[in-house]
Length: 290
Image (cartoon, rainbow, N blue to C red; front, side, top):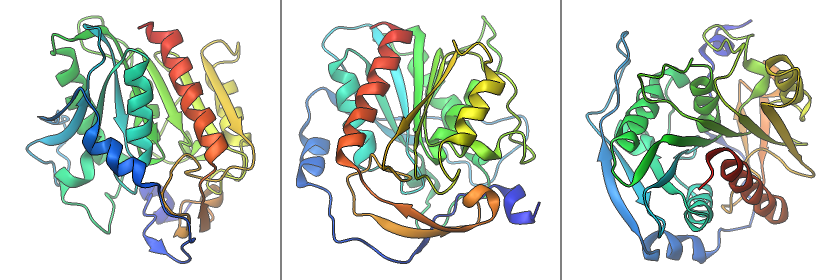
């Protein structure tokens, strides 16, 4: 295994070919004109071993449903940062009765063209957000889930491996959209042998990181042989990031193609993206019961 694989870089930074397909202006309109949202900040929770570039605070957008207190969902962006995925999933979840928090980790860390070396460097943001939500009076602290995309999906999977301590805040459900399934238990530091709550993985059948859904399906069987705790949803004719509305692209990532590296297609699929939002809301409603 080469050093780049061990570092588990998700540095999808080399843009090769953009598509002539732009996100609808509705995304920007929705971001700034929705009701019941607030811009908030919270402190990351530092681990025992210091991590580099840990910010003093993380900013985010909090969405509130009509009825409160309510269960909550932390939404974690991918390598492109906050985009159409976070706003669309957040709106759907708010309408379903959830408090949502979209964390903007890249802005807080001052990240523009590069990415952190490992996902572990960004986990303090996850635990800080959890602590923030637990202490809000409009959130039910026993019903908090996490939903992530790509980089954020890896964060969701790493959060799921933490055992539940009844005396400490914890997530109760984990939704991971294309979480690079082949790397778990193969790359040092990304061991995943059990999960602490129900997990739903979404993956496109054309995803270039895992070269299709097989790796995620195999991971689910290893984690949950009974098939009752971990489920995988496969989306046809769908590439990595298929639920984005932004323009498609081809990027180069050394962690793609089961670690062999190479080009990755990022391409929206409007129909399957809409289905993925529905499935995520359905899963979180089943597990967190708003």
